[in-house]
Length: 451
Picture (cartoon, rainbow, N blue to C red):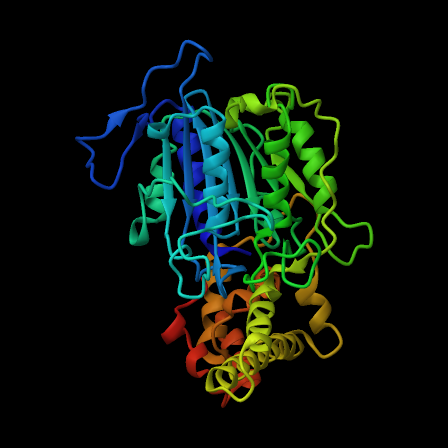
């Protein structure tokens, strides 16, 4: 579960509801503007009858699952219109935002109508051997050049992001995150004019691709995965198809097929939620139209991706590849190996502690099955979200930070709440499972709480 978007989802629904009631102002503000300076969105163009806006967002590379030079990053990408919003949300790195910007720019959106949220900590990263360059495909060109930076650093916030949605009526949302279906299952209404597609269902991880050792691999100097299967699939589909002929539902089916895996060992199940009545809308309404694709027949399928990695293992892959590359006996190699060992040890500690808590609370035989039990279709992952937050904080106070890896156990914490476990019972079980554990750098006092 990606916690930023759990919080953000509530804001999004509030914004959508306000827009539906006609109470939202159609304003887009830049960091240098206050509410008195903000300009209304321009009048619709004569060509399409609407003015297209795009909002692209990439929070810092230390907050989520797929690595970028060893860090992790989350991305949100929106293509807005006064009539229609396309909100593309993923747990990918800033490469996605830059790549999406280039797609929208080629599609005819004016630069002044594209608002970019980007933490901007990738291009100049010391471990980026192509300093100032970002790629999103093994043979891809630089997608960083020319990208504006309307919001960067600490300006990349949920408040600023959702402020740009004010005054719009309809939304199409793409979500790339592990267990991303859990953010909408049983929560997403069908009457808000919002259509959602997610990279995974409520109980599975999403997957990274273009990784070292897989086919196709990234350029030799890159030790990190370049993209997510789901994210690169919708963007590569958009780049190779005539979007005046391809509908939302067509891309959904194509991305769903490419993201799944026939061997059930890799890949995930792309899902859809919310209002499905406007899936026949053509994609050019959301992304513009690239004249270079006018003669594309839309009949050629996207090439299959032969390699993928669980998003939560991408940082381990990066560290391991870096370890292999360093000189034998060097202090840096020793430190990288130490970091790998510490990371793996903390992950094992998290897994065993949560398993033991389940046995302490529900009994040795029933504990694991109760914690892992999925809820029936149509039910949200948890009934009491405040309880979920309390359970996570109690656990982290005694057992150390969940880290992004430990987010996979969020269902276990939800099931503790769903089965009526009190905060006092959770504290007793956490002390029993983790008493004496020195969380050190994994302490929430260092990393902050996950919820």
